Image (cartoon, rainbow, N blue to C red):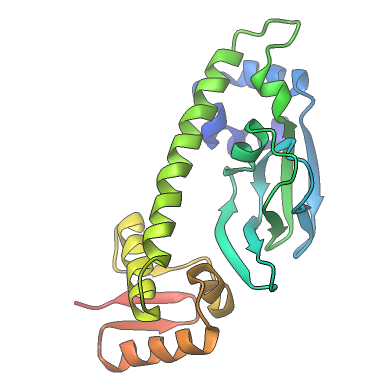
Amino acid sequence: MEKYMGVLRKCPLFAGISEKDLLKMLTCMGARVELFDKKYTIITEGNPAKYIGVVLSGKAQIIQVDYYGNRSILTEVESGDVFGEAFACAEVQSIPITVIASESSEIMLVECAHILHTCSNNCGFHQRLIYNLMKDLATKTILFHQKIEIISKRSTREKLLTYLSFYAKKVGRNQFEIPYDRQELADYLEVDRSGLSAEISKLRNEGILESEKKWFALLE
């Protein structure tokens, strides 16, 4: 685990835990690292929620597929991000999401039970770890409400501009590269791809934005 220490130190789940304690903790909890090729499924919908995942390298997408096969991207996670924690903490017996590697990725998996229940060694860092987990869940709740605000807009145009405005605010500039290609952006916004492409063209013609593949610029 030592070679991943740089990534683990920036992971919110391990904030405030010393490197020495972190290595001890990961051993105590039986954390394991697995390599997933691009488009490989990391967590499958319908399985019991047992694991919390930490992205050590690469990226993954969290998606939902409805009864009719429509695909919705909930979010993308990258190096240092945590996923699956809400469902694992709730001990959901049938997880409602699928996590897929969007590029070759190294993922650390930890059984949630090892985090929520103090081990026989009575490790002192457990209290801090649980605090970090609760803070992470609260942060994810805020982001979830942001996603609801985006997709609750009535038109594709409003959804797109709301998403781009949020992203510009997040990165602190009006030019940026989003993590999604056109189809993935359509899946995230829960709109038709052709309609999204048409709306982007209209906004370019109106001088509201510029775009090239994943790159966007919001114009004044």
